[in-house]
Amino acid sequence: MSETTLTHPLVDGPVGPGCKKVDPIVVADGVVRRFGGNTAVSVDHVEIPRGRITALIGPNGAGKTTFFNLLTGFDKPNEGDWSFNGQKLGNVPAFKVARRGMVRTFQLTKSLGRLTVLQNMLLGATKQPGENLFAALLKPLWRSREEEITVRADDLLRRFKLDAKREDYAASLSGGQRKLLEMARALMSEPELVMLDEPMAGVNPALTQSLLGHIKELKNDGTSVLFVEHDMHMVRHISDWVIVMAEGKVVAEGPPETVMDDPAVIDAYLGAHHDTDLGDMIEQKSVTERARRVEAKEASLADD
Amino acid sequence: MDFLFVINQALGVALSPTTAAYALAAIGIGVHFGYAGLLNFGQAGFMAIGAYAFGITTLSLDFPFPLAFLSAIVASVVFALILGIPTLRLRADYLAIVTIAAAEIVRYIVSTTGLSSVTGGASGLSAFARSFQSFNPLPGGSYGFGPWTYSRAEFWVFLWGWGLVAIATVIVWLLMRSPWGRVVKGIREDEDAVRSLGKNVYAYKMQALVLGGVFGSLAGVIFILPRAIQPTNYATTLTFFTWTILLLGGAATVFGPIIGSMIFWVLLVLTEGVIGGLVRADVITFLDTTQAGQIRFVLLGLALILLVVFRPQGIFGNKKELSFNV
Ligand SMILES: Nc1ncnc2c1ncn2[C@@H]1O[C@H](COP(=O)(O)OP(=O)(O)O)[C@@H](O)[C@H]1O
Ligand SMILES: [Mg+2]
Image 1 (cartoon, rainbow over the protein chains, first blue to last red):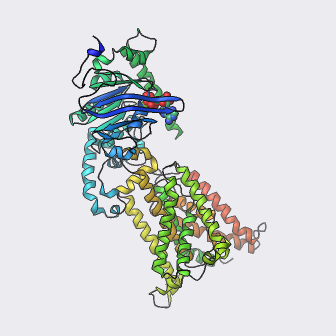
Image 2: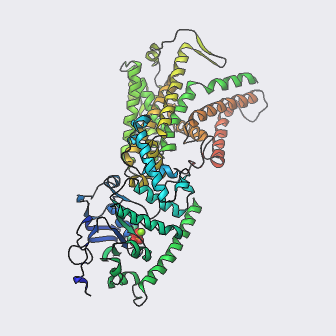
């Protein structure tokens, strides 16, 4: 099986790094971000398919989070351009990117601990008249919208098994619950594309199954999903497409069944350890890594 | 020592227009810091802007009271925009530094001799309340009872002072239960999270800065109505006092600034009366009367430290919602 002859229904032409998609929702071109001498991201061309679940994988420091930050307007590239739904997004501020329907979550969770779980959720909703300084003074102007979004929030909280925590301050949630809250909050705006940066990190294994379910449901509702994840089981299980980054570049992409066999992926992840089984290796890595991350989080919480 | 006199004085100051002015200024930084997480260390600057805009438009431009009042609002909006436009996109510390500096700059400008034809220079301005009093609809005589007895003119100031405090309190209460308040409280904690949800963080911070600044400016107007405008009043100690009041009552609370201001002033008057009385009665021999006046502020600083250590959310605050480490 040779790479150049491989085709796929999502792809227009041969499958390979930077290949054209039949119906892309995001198209990025020549996106470069340097930190001093270190080139964190240098993506020549990449397209994210619409209405599908796409996994962005790669070793630590590959530039996945930085690429997320660039696409969503949280960071500025040195060069490059990209579009969402055919509209150029370079230099668009982060809040406008979100308003256009491209909403992201953060690797280091940003739940708002001093707001309640419900308030966190309501903050995610769009088109709220009460967010205007003057309209805010007159409750009749925003009461009905508030009721609508509260219904939606309660529905999402039930789906994410956070309904019992509705009135609690988000600070009282566990690390995994905060991840869930952040994801549920991002869904309040009914985005077209959800970008999740390590959604499973720190989430209790008992919850991961239902989280996978939620992500699949999103796809069924017509939402496109792009997520960063280290857990290869999850990647294999739910993604329709996998993009692999290493040292800032897209080194491989393809459907999950075949991308793991790509020599470029094996290189990226394993370096010299060619004969080790990739699945085991990555899993090993993700387990130790997750343990480390949980420790780090606990340490930082203790500091607070 | 006449305890009754001291207590009477303390009760009187609890409702004085000055207490109202400090409460209003504290409500302003409450919007800034308590709700939006903005560090404004130049509330004295906003108060000076309000006081001078009011005094100058009245005296130099002959503005009637309502127009002079409006000028104070407009001036503080402009001042807030000047401070906010370059700093609100940056980290929180920049606003803090810029507001400290700006308040000092305002104080130097109004004290310069070059401008004394307009600002009165170092001696300030006086006799600007005539237009304000000409709008006084109250019939003559005295108002109130006991420690709270006011002349007709004093009561007019009283009504405006506490009336504005009441209006500001209602506005803050309405805003903080609204979606606007939710966005602003989210910003207090994590700007990027709020940005990722499609909110224009910069615009909200600007609105909060302007709103709290307008309250500060009107506090400046109330503060000068019973007295003259003195540039030395607008030193950083004034900002420090408003912060003490805010933290005393609780930064993210609706009534905290009012109660904080009352406690602050009552305590100042009580300690002055008691310590001064003990000095005069030769019970305390190691202080003279001037030192007795100053020792109150040492005690105040101590009280603030104890407050920060033992009750960081203030007297009324909810610890889960807010303490100092915003
Ligand atoms: N703010 C920053 N300043 C300097 N270097 C950074 C910054 N953010 C990321 N980097 C660097 O960019 C590279 C990519 O990081 P990141 O995007 O976080 O990787 P990933 O999410 O794939 O683990 C790393 O080498 C990291 O050290
Ligand atoms: Mg990352």
